[in-house]
Amino acid sequence: MTHRKHFTCLVVDDDAGFAAMLAQVVTEEGGQVKTCSNLRAARAEIEHTGFDLVVLDNRLPDGTGYEFHQQLQRLAPSALAVMVTGVPELGQAVELTRNGLFDYLTKPLNVADFIACLRRVRQRLSHPGPADGPDELRGDSPALREVVRSLTQLAQHPTATVLLLGETGTGKDLAARMLHRLTHGGKTPPLPYVPLNCSAVPAEMFEAELFGSEKGAYTGAEKRREGLIEAAAGGTLFLDEIAESPLPQQAKLLRFLDSHEYRPLGANSLRHFTGRVVAATNRSLADEVAQGRFRNDLMYRLSVVAIRLPALREHPSDLEMLTETFLSQLAEKYGRKRPLLKPADLEALRRYHFPGNVRELRNLLERALLHTDEAAAWLAFDPVWLSGRPAASGSAAAAASAPPPPPGRELNALELQEYNLIQEALRVEDGAIRRAAARLGITHQALMRRLGKWPELRNVPAPRQ
Image (cartoon, rainbow, N blue to C red; front, side, top):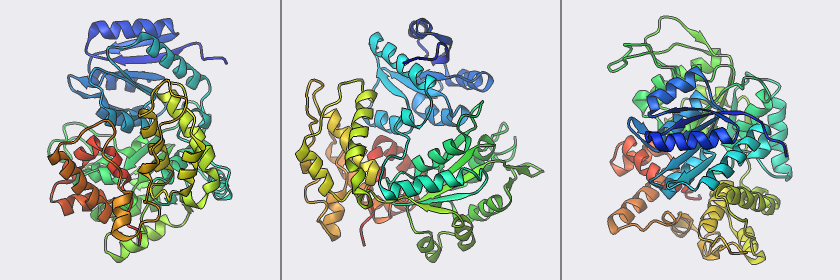
């Protein structure tokens, strides 16, 4: 297999000696390297130069690599990111890799592991495309083929707004990325793909986050702020969990979708967006309208072009192929041999209802892999994790469907009580983070911090009617 001969790399670490060692290894592997010791300098370098790869420490003088990774996806959507941290956190590692982090390494660093990582980076850069990573809709069932056919057809209309519907974990984010690739793949420089989780932005900051703001537009606005619409210019803006967008801002969102024009906070003139908006929700917008939480006219505007992602139980013929694919990807991600899945365990998966769909399947396999000895030939899959859950009903089903506490982390009595309360609130509120926070009597930001600590709680299934 051929690799790209050269690539550009930014190393961000406040330990000058360690950064120099990383830079030397990168150089020996064909990289052209710059180093910086803080996130402010990293932002400036990325905005000025752009890089194929960013190697991040987690704890830096002016913030964390964990937080910066989200910004990096907007600053340089095509850049690969690797974190090298001296304070590893399993839950954080899982969340970051689900959100596009290429690799997660720990200090003291095994240089051979870092070299292997760099060679995978070169392989990815040499052969970009859907087959390189986990961000691809996979399946050969008629249901999945119909989704891919619809996405391929829509790719011919690069400014048409698209609404993706489906249960939690069906792959709506993957469908959005696939539509972006089908529409803009192969263009140089690559056009931006900018995601926004509408539930993760405080209501008072939603407008500034989306539309941007001018210096002095509000208290604390010390400089001009680029909004996500501007960042996505020419490419794709993905509004995930659109049903959670604040009701007072929905009229402005509707006007933007109608005209593709927007006005940053504090600006005097309108600006035009030349790209596609993709929205997604796992809830019925009609029900949200009936409850007074969503505008009727915005629902109709979004529903002009809608694609429904099928639940995993609706295309069970894809289960074995998905299992094989995920195990291979996870083994590569953790740099280890891929174990086999016993036929009896595969059969247990086939019998399971999967309320969390494809995402839940991947999470179950990742949990199992982390519990499997590296020398083991078979995956240490425990069917007890699934026992009783598919056939349960009512409150029993809700309790059985709940995710277990984070793997590898013991919770004290107080933490376990908090974990269970959050889990129940999210289930009752159908995964709506703002409403769950209100039910718990805490702020939206406080709940988001806890979900950062326990990201698997985002996959809590809603109660079945």
